[in-house]
Image 1: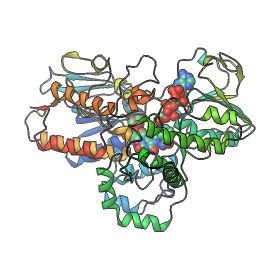
Image 2 (image 1 turned 60 degrees about the vertical axis):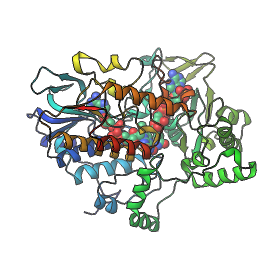
Image 3 (image 1 turned 120 degrees about the vertical axis):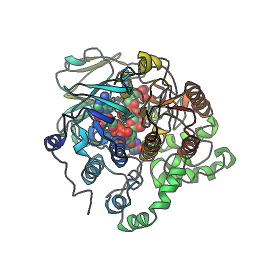
Length: 554
Ligand code: FAD
Ligand code: NAP
């Protein structure tokens, strides 16, 4: 089958829904989410001969890349790395066009995969899972899955493939509904696109989504005002078209490359110098940072082995990025405001941009510091901060997500003896390996809290979890009742391990969505596992090889 980024259209939703048999309500497995995790999970479940139904609130596949259609949206892991590795023909035949793929290109890829493996007939779109309840009075026990559609299901197993960054969030600003213009959230962008030509636009937030979209919005709009609470570190993408030669070379070496990715720290093979940033002199260090800056992407952060653990080492990289901002931004006051201070580089998700800092040299782009003078309300004509009032035709909220736990808790999951996941996680998420939860039998979470997930190339982490879950189900199939459940002691030990490894780094100290600091009232817990995808995979494999150590299998 020939495949290219440009040649695959989206299949019509209506057509897809016609082939989903809504009369069937009993399944072996119900999967929530049809992003890259849910799609691959479905493919593997079919391979096991299990009857599966995937449910997604969207009208199509792709998850993140279905929802985040804001201008400038693109991946900051390289395309040939951020793609499935499970099918060699797919890997060989798909043609990526750019080093860092755009959202439309990734979405075309997701749709191609759905077509290629005929996934849509088992996916129910436009349906939100509203509750999942473990019914142990049933014989055998089942999960009862309710949705916002008339449909409800029972299944022996449920898989939450609901994504770490899928519960988008606009802060609870007073007067939000009073605004007379258009409001947008980057994570729920209109499918038909938005033309900002001639408009006065306010952008709230300066995270990755804002940093990607602001230069594109500024290229259209009459005037752009960016409201910044915390300056972010951003590195240039240095994006470019992929050459045929480099595609050929990668495709020839794909197996070896994928193996290296799986064994690496972050799911991308990157050369890390096994030396402290403080063990080399300043000139050597600057030359190294400079070389990695030119490559583009996140290579700078991997220059030395202690940049995420030693504050003084980290500060050398942070100061290097600040010096780059000062070189680009002409107005010294704006440059200083854009220069992140007070937290280590990399401990909030580093951003990767195209022309972000340069955009602030444009006369029609303003930066407003809202750290000390926060937004107090949205008004009918714009917004008000503690210091001033602004009028807009449109406001873009690039204000992020209730990350890692938002979508899971949004499903109102109830486990053994009526225990609610929300109650269990009141003080922060508790999982075994980020893939299972004690008290919630036969529930699997793909890239759940406590797994490397958002600290990795997520395609690598998704494939690893899906394959581990499939193997576990294959193992269970030989058992009469097929119930698998994390044991509390194993979970406690894992939660402690995740925290201990986290505490060896600088991550937990910074206010970021990694620790839930972006959501008022959310318990402060460093949620991802920073031990590395390679060692994490090894641990998961050992646990399986030891008869699913730490799980009760009955
Ligand atoms: P998602 O793609 O989030 O899919 C989850 C699906 O579950 C969604 O379609 C959603 O509609 C559905 N869902 C959620 N709750 C329910 C419910 N209750 N009922 C029904 N359906 C539900 N990762 C990287 O590795 N590199 C990157 O460069 C990168 N860039 C990103 C850029 C953006 C803008 C964002 C938001 C994330 C980015 N990520 C990146 C992370 C990205 O989320 C993952 O790479 C990956 O796409 C996650 O796939 P997933 O299938 O696990 O989840
Ligand atoms: P984000 O990183 O959480 O950024 C949200 C922004 O909104 C921050 O600047 C935040 O300020 C601001 N904000 C939130 N609440 C606010 C409030 N009440 N008042 C004022 N400002 C407020 O969200 P995101 O940019 O959507 O990115 C989320 C994650 O998705 C990224 O970290 C990354 O993992 C992924 N992503 C990746 C890419 C990519 O390049 N591939 C692109 C987009 C997203 P504070 O920092 O002060 O909280």
